[in-house]
Amino acid sequence: MTNKQLEFIRSTLIKKKEDLLNSSRHAFKQMMENDQRPSDEGDYAVEEVNQYLTCTIQTRDRKCLLEIEKAFKRMEDGEYGCCESCGEQISFERLKVQPFCSLCVDCMQDIELEQKRLA
Image 1 (cartoon, one colour):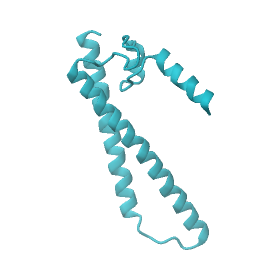
Image 2 (tube, one colour; image 1 turned 180 degrees about the vertical axis):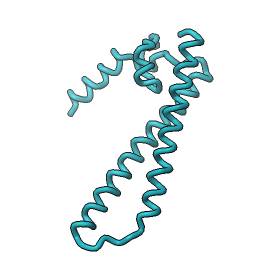
Image 3 (tube, helix red, strand yellow; image 1 turned 30 degrees about the vertical axis):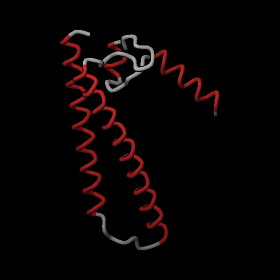
Image 4 (tube, rainbow, N blue to C red; image 1 turned 135 degrees about the horizontal axis):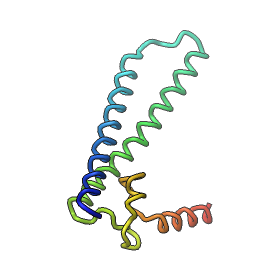
């Protein structure tokens, strides 16, 4: 991977991290501002579903933030772009789409197939 490509990926990761943090701050602010009690059971049910969805999204975003931090660490260690399973280079096209991935397409497909087989 060239230095230019690495810098492109680094800036993509920084932008993604900023977006996730801003989204998290916004969701937290909305939850704190929404302190009204629902007036009936229907409103209460809608509020419960909204809170559940917000928590689910926040959990997914936290996992993504952790993966981004791991990608930054791999960059620091000079290991970024190498598949953690087979050691082969991950294609730049894959890294552009999912810059925090740590597995090449083939290894990811193998894992997914194994998970389907076990399910």
